[in-house]
Image 1 (cartoon, helix red, strand yellow):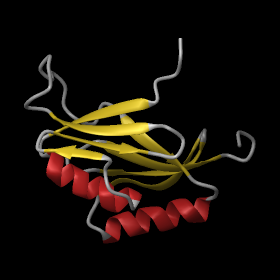
Image 2 (cartoon, helix red, strand yellow; image 1 turned 60 degrees about the horizontal axis):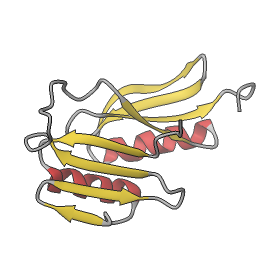
Image 3 (cartoon, helix red, strand yellow; image 1 turned 45 degrees about the vertical axis):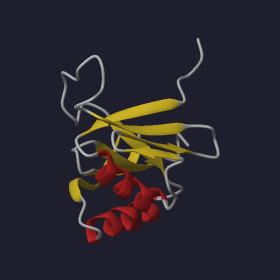
Length: 125
């Protein structure tokens, strides 16, 4: 079985979320409608934002049960990234800290989806 290169987040307001992720990624979505937006990256990975009110079957879970993880080259990049996110008004739910896999911190998007910045511990990287 192949690895799924397509992630879909269910959101309450696709236009608001598309603007948020446009600013986060520094690129516009390749597709955008009132109920859906999609970003495509050089790697081929895709991130879509779909209105939780229109997805079928109906959504039964709320945000926060998964995360988008962004690998960074070093601890200073994690600190800088979290500081930038905080300055932009994102809620930081995990200040920079060391965990068994490396150095990390986490923020929330407008719907409460978790956004993790991390760099692997040297012995894992």
